[in-house]
Image (cartoon, rainbow, N blue to C red; front, side):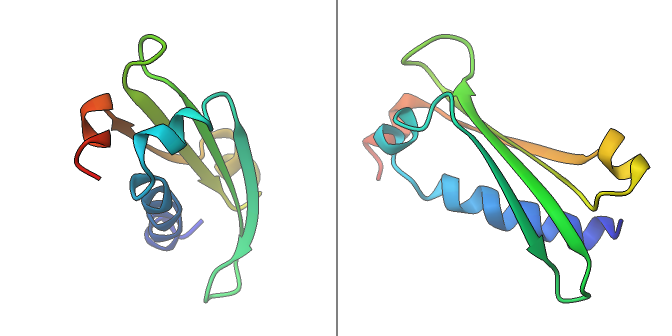
Length: 93
């Protein structure tokens, strides 16, 4: 797996969540999204995103993403990133 390419794809997907309001993210808590995409190099990637409460309901929201290219090692140890959206950010949007 090309880690730089995979990181760019995953960061791009997580950025779409970063631009959503806190209230919109609240409505997504508990949802898991599975995407398959092709990179410019032609590599097929699988992206999984999970939206959940970070510590407690109505607190910060964690958006966790993972990406792999389907190979055995990559599937066992996917590249992962997450972001935390605190409730206070809803007023800033």
